[in-house]
Length: 134
Image 1 (spheres, one colour):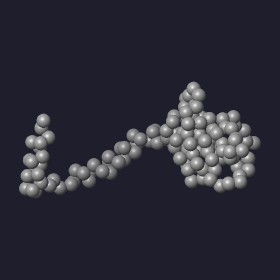
Image 2 (image 1 turned 180 degrees about the horizontal axis):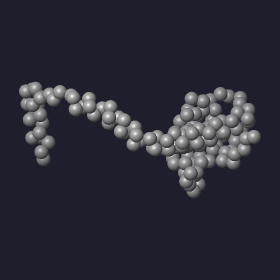
Image 3 (image 1 turned 135 degrees about the horizontal axis):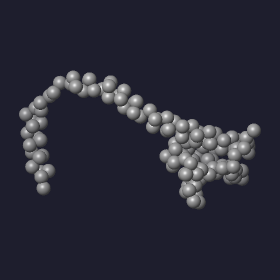
């Protein structure tokens, strides 16, 4: 059973308008969800009233049924939730990811040979430094 109250079908113009609350979903999440539809629809995002954003999806294929527009709206809502969950999980795992990256890269950075600049590089640096001092 499909039921949602956050979208409106404009069948005569072959588009669906989805109203999303920025109090529930931050704008970057809304844009991330909308991005997933750029291959199958023209996507527009507009500021709505109060804390709302209107996402307009116009399918690329012509001669679509009303049910196709409804399906597109439901798919957007699913993607919106998915994008939100992905972002939350990514935020939760950021510390672990950073620790793993540091552990993997730090030994390699510490083992890099130290290189002294060539005389040409040193000479170019000495020419630039006086110009930087104002």
